[in-house]
Image (tube, rainbow, N blue to C red; front, side, top):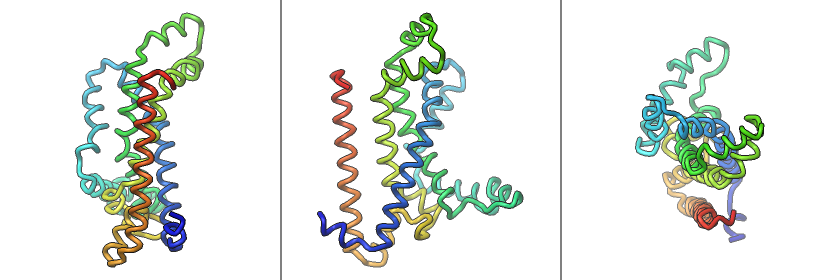
Length: 232
């Protein structure tokens, strides 16, 4: 294993750092955005609820290249968002870290929302009703009731989101291309190494991702068993 890391080139390390940065940012953003969305879905009786759930789940069935293509059109220089940004004096978001971050957030959305939604549904409204009768504010209810009772859902959501972002390829390649230090994450670099017939480097990076994916899944299933037994 030490030889695996010693053989990595500066370009490989740069891609690893960029990938971890993307995973961390995506996970934090989705926890902030996905928590209120999952909470609303767990309680709402709105007619829009089914449509919102379908939109959230779209990345699970939609080919990543399709999502990446439409995001490229939207965020590129001729798209609605990209052209507006350029008119305001900014640059468009295609082929940039900000662009692949947006794509990653959208593509990993269901991996955050679904575990949180199931966790909120299992908790139900009763604990909050009891807390409210005791005079707890909304903020107190969040930190004293929701987070402790649903901590398993938050851990699983964060872990799955991080792991899913780690292996993203199609959306990032379509939207960001392969720019070292900007959009060239590990999955894209593995593709570049393979295309250049540099199989040794591709193998090293692929093995690292394989090990990382196994460790993440092992943690998720281990946590799920502990949650089911009520030991976490």
